[in-house]
Each structure stands twice: as C-alpha cells, then as structure tokens.
Image (cartoon, rainbow, N blue to C red):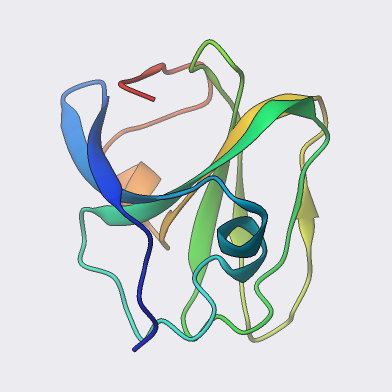
Length: 121
C-alpha cells in the first residue's frame, strides 16, 4: 500500500475526520492512487495553497470516492462523485483552495452538505 502523507483531524459539524494532507506537488498529484481502501472516517485533504479552479481525477483510485470543493474560509462549495469505473474527472465550478476526498457515501451518511464549514484546515 502506498505511504500517505502526514495527517491531522478536521471537523465538519459534529463529525471528526482523520485526513492525510497533500500539500506538495508530488502528494497533490499522487493523491489516493493505489490506496486499497479508506476507513469510514478517513480521507485526504488537498491544499493547493491559493484559490484556483481545481480538477480531480479518479485515475489510479481503486474504489469510488466523493470530493468536496472547499473555499479558503472552510466552506464546502460543492460535493461531487469520483468513480474510477467511469474515469470521469470532476472540476470545481468556482475558485477554491481545498479539496477533500472521502469514501463514497460519507457526506450523506454524516448529513454533511454544501454550505457546511470545515474547521482545523
């Protein structure tokens, strides 16, 4: 299994999530490629360092994911599906600083929606 970057715990509403933090170019490019699975409350936080339009791809992922696009103040602006079976990329509609990948179904299961705010980014 690929080694993931160092992590931290973030909070969305009442839900805590353990995330690996992709902040350097290699980790941002590699993401979760080759990772066999994630625990239900694990994910990967991508910090692009500045506001920009972001495109995420499921290429090399071994299981379906959801991605939240997040503004620099921590607000979830969009939630989209990344399915390696179809390989479709997903892009943010607006400029954002962060993307959060989690196992498919995580947001619905935990009642997390667009407009919610993430703390401890």
